[in-house]
Length: 340
Ligand SMILES: [Zn+2]
Image 1 (cartoon, protein in one colour):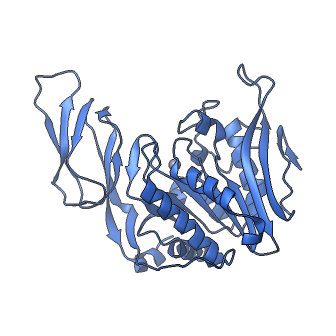
Image 2 (cartoon, rainbow, N blue to C red; image 1 turned 90 degrees about the vertical axis):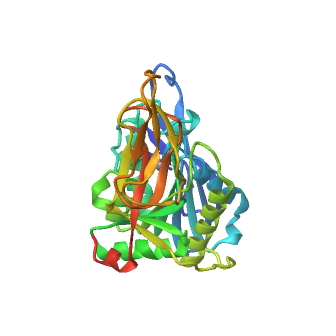
Image 3 (cartoon, rainbow, N blue to C red; image 1 turned 45 degrees about the vertical axis):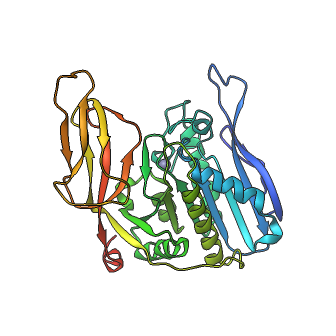
């Protein structure tokens, strides 16, 4: 039993076998006056091998990762592995119940809440538990994201650079093992309150994914993510029965080689490109029709930069400032080692 400031977890992470439990957070408001908020946590352990932390539902409306971890939990018994899996299938549990990106309790965006604060708001308290109680137990981690309700991603892994170049290289080792065809490279220091950078700062190699999105469960992206998670388990020696087919990975520059195309005013957007399309600066992205001024001619929106369409908006109704696309340029594997 771990107990810190209104928060309890009954799991014994040293116990052999499969345990289901919760990180129970006491919380009192008009809705939860006498209740607890039970963030689900599963520990599967066999022997003294390495530990992998797996999470999904960091944003509650991203479902491919949640399905992957629910499948893994029910398909995996302790005797199937060598080591330990600590699994958080709905990390921001109130957000997942609300089919929302952030928690309805405190508007907490989990991926902007690390390292968290003991006794803080619900989202911050859960982040603190993960940072202080779980990260010290693990050898590596994967946080499974998708585009969420408002966007779709070309399915990819995210590589955060770390201040310690050795950790960046270990992150790259996980990216290679996961073996998604596409990887976006971002600077960890630019999102200091995210899960990946805080894990890296604790010395834990850590990667995340973006597996399609739209608030749905895409079959191909789910299989890609399931295979990737098993590939990493194989890479760490936790399983030994996965057939790993290595394919080359395209790296995209999310540091200074990407640009969002945004809507200049409220309207209905008609896109003319798809995820994964190669575009050149000046190419037509789509037409924007004014929401209210029917007589106003549609505005042709053009891309500001050249590269691959990695993200597109889900939802035709847009506001001034809504992101419509993210276009990213390629980078070489060699360039990654010069970063951080
Ligand atoms: Zn997310």
